[in-house]
Image (cartoon, rainbow, N blue to C red; front, side):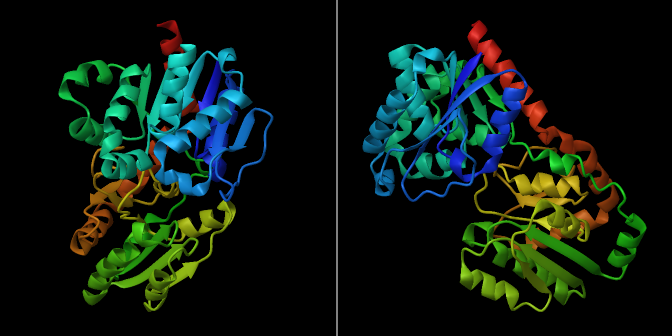
Amino acid sequence: MKILHINCNYAGRSLHQTMIDTLQALGVENNVFVPIHPKQEVVVAERENVCLSVCFPRWSRFLFAYKQKKIYDSLCKSIDVQQHDLIHAYTLFTDGNCAYKLHKHFHIPYLVTIRNTDINYFFKFRPDLIPLAVRILSHASGICFLSQEYKKQVFLKYIPRKLWRELLQKTHVIPNAIHDFWLNNLFTARDYNATYENFAKKRIKIIFVGGIDKNKNLLTTCAALNALAQKGWQIRYTVVGKIFDQEIADKVSRLSYSDILTPMPPERLLEVYRDHDIFVMPSFKETFGLVYAEAMSQGLPVVYTKGQGFDKQFKEGTVGYHVFPKDPTDIEQKILACVQRYKHISQTCLSQVSKFQWKKICLEYIQIYHAVLNN
């Protein structure tokens, strides 16, 4: 089985490379086409089976048809498409449209994954492209979502009801995975007696890991923590991440109970996670949020956003709670809810985090690949 992966996000994140490596180890032959612009950041190592194609100017993101032609032409020149059994497109619009055109020309089946950019940019701000999206989904042999919540949103808002039955039959929900490092280093030695003693004295340690920008919503988290402080809680708030918005970073750092740490290797971050009680990240938009799963691996209950990628990965209250991101009172109350059921939630996090193992997730994809080819 030989798969052509079209992935416009591959260059900027190592997780996609890990997926390809895992598929390869499980017996799947892969070629990856990665369309990028000249100034795009590349963090992955070059591989023989990965084609990084600088094929469109940065400004062309505003001209969908022009950019798509550049991507399609470059792919056809760079790769022998007909040598592949199946195409996997990693976004609906940018990658999926290319897969759809290849399918029409070469009659090769394709699978498409729907992500945050598709839902929170293209569907929202490019309604003119919605009919194209429906055509891409209708001709796809498989449709994948990272979460049940995103699946629900797309079907309710954008898919004609007459197509629901047809499309749902080929729809799957498969989350992202985390690096095996986290699953191989579960924190099973947490001292819950000491934690509860701290809670009894109203001491709590909150952590956030991610980019410091408006989307991550740190200031609303701070408002919730300020409310807890006014009620007598002694708070330690640790923010780990790269600063993209200096104004937000300055406001956070001015709080007496906060610390901002620069990004760090997993071995160091592991220790920081273990020194905290609860992970809080009420992002406005989030495809999935790997850091939620990383925090779970260290026994931390998680507070996440209602209606975004991590919501409904588990039954509410199982590994943490969802919140309305603009409501600091809701965030405050959900932190306290985690405190009240801390040991149970923490231990459930440790027992359930294996859901995000790469081998397990890649085996699900392989099963879908086989089902598509068998049909």
